[in-house]
Length: 55
Image (tube, rainbow, N blue to C red; front, side, top):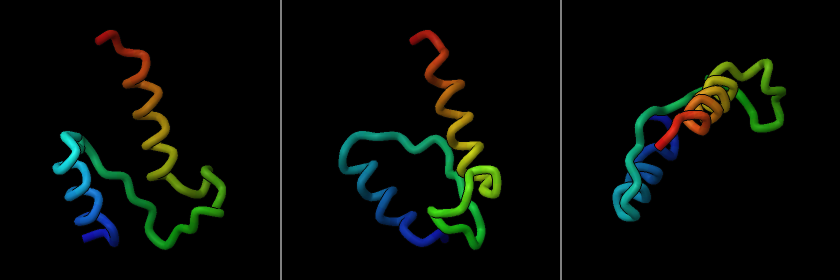
């Protein structure tokens, strides 16, 4: 399990959110460039795709 996953799942459940995917970058730091973090880049791409869909 990814560190923090249980806390995130618990928060989502308690607040009525549905987690639809997880994104992970092994051995990455928040200070690393996005180009070196494929999981973070995939998350941003998913957000852009979802934002462009009609409700």
